[in-house]
Amino acid sequence: MGKTMAGKSVQILAITLIMLCVGVAAGYYYSQSLIPPPPPKRVSLFEKIKQRGHIVVGTSADYPPYEFIDPNTKKITGLDVEIVEAVAKELGISVKWEDMPFDALIAAAQAGKIDMIAAAMGLKAERFPKLDYSIAYEQGDNVIVVRGDSTVKPFTDLAQAGKLGLKIGVQTGTIQEGRINDLVKEGKAKKENVISYERVDLMISDLVAGRIDAAMIDKPVADSFATRYAIKVVYTEWAPPKCLWIPKGEKELLEAVDTAMLKLHSNGVIQQLINKWHGS
Image (cartoon, rainbow, N blue to C red; front, side, top):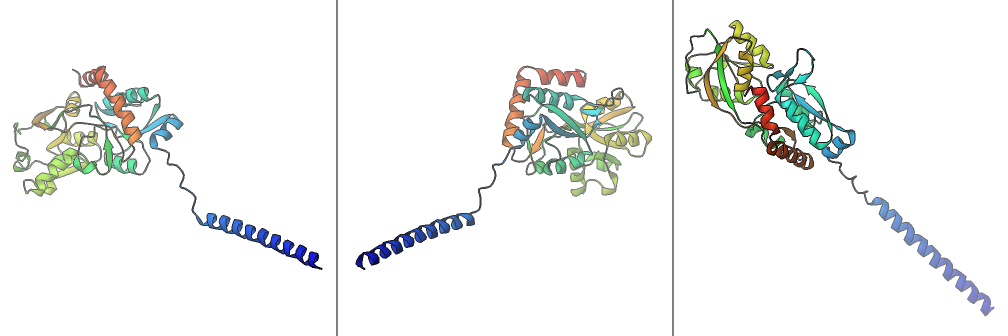
């Protein structure tokens, strides 16, 4: 009888220990199930670009000699295009171009529709919180142009454009638009005399047709249009350097682009392209 009781006690003890272990295990696994899994590792934009083998670059192909549609090939060409193609070659990838209005480029980059902007886009403080920018590739001038037969004489103070009551065209979202709008804010020009255009070629057409009195653009662009239209420069000022722009926070892509740009600067490729497209 004593042995039987002892045996039952051992069995009960063993069952209790087993149940305890099962309970502890179940509790452990249940508690583990409540812990959220670690977030998936973020794949950088540069990694995605390398995986797909091409970079999507946004531009506004109405701004010769920086970017425009070649009338023969019907493809986008120009200084910015060749610089980006050279950068892409250094990175071992190809380029897919997306043509869109200039003032849509930043939003497209922020939304992930494009990986880079190449559109003669200069350094502007308002852009810094939205995008990162590469090493500059060029610094030039802004100019105001008028028709070749205009009686407007050259001037050295931008405010003179307001004093003369010039109806002046600018491209939407550009540094030039900002400069003229500053005159309006300072009371040095009338708002109704500032005409914003989505496309520069339409602005120049209006200038030549007499629908506006003047237009403010980059000097190389003025030089390019001057080969086809009778326009002349009446005002010149310093313009911020031009850069390539990428979505904010994409450090790997920025470093890769800057490394390529440094190489292209050091071996003279960028200067050669500038000379080619600016006719130097």
